Image 1: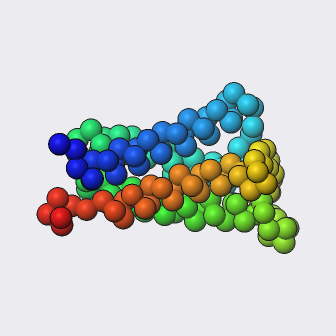
Image 2: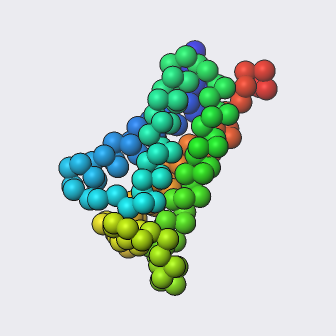
Image 3: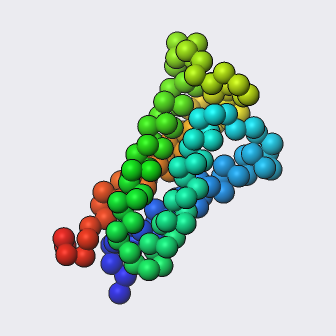
Length: 139
């Protein structure tokens, strides 16, 4: 029988896969050039596919100690990146000097859904599920 921990791992893995495929779609198919913060978010999201995949198929709940720090850092970067796009005063700080400006919005669905928002959502899902994940002895 499948327990809640297995479901949490699987859904976390699925969220990381969707986020990774989404970022590859935007850059490789749509031709959007990632900015500096986009690269940082990718650096933190892409390994989660492998880590969570291994954890899911081996029922290894100890991946939480690797996943949670990466997801929390990714969440902070995504949140700041989203603020850069949506708060006019922050964009003038210009932490991204080379290439595409981090305040650029390739997509803006419904007036608030941008690429950093999508990454923020994926990191949020992963973080929540990692906090819900309990060691088998903690049940």
